[in-house]
Length: 146
Image 1 (cartoon, rainbow, N blue to C red):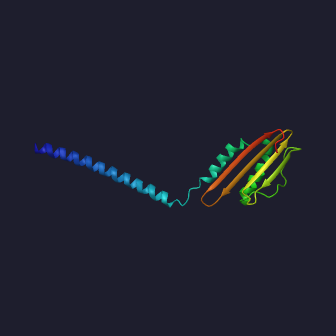
Image 2 (cartoon, rainbow, N blue to C red):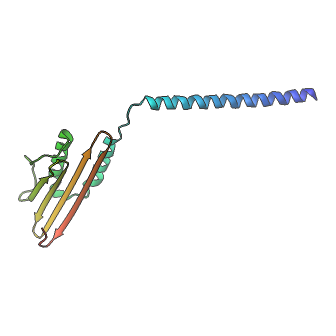
Image 3 (cartoon, rainbow, N blue to C red):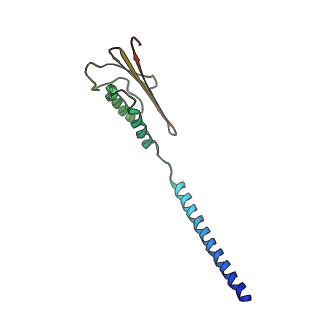
């Protein structure tokens, strides 16, 4: 009987030893994960997010003003504000458009007039060290709307 108790005790101690070893390994992997994340200074999700947003938003803008939007967005990426005036932008012939930028240089509006339709596109982008905000609107008026 004593031998059975000793065998059972050995089995229980081996099981507890294995469980203790597994627990130590899990703890070590958690510590390695925490230290590797804490050594990463910043995560830059902004660039991939901006590209995804631009793909989604490009479908909402009128195709006539796409060259204007491309030029303005490239300028904004380089200079952190929108241009005051448009220069050397190739658009469709006889396209009657008006480009306006806000005083702070964070928003711009493009208005296109064709026959009885007025299309207005506006985009604002404000960025700081810790945040970024993009808003975009498109409206289309028919008739004599101004």
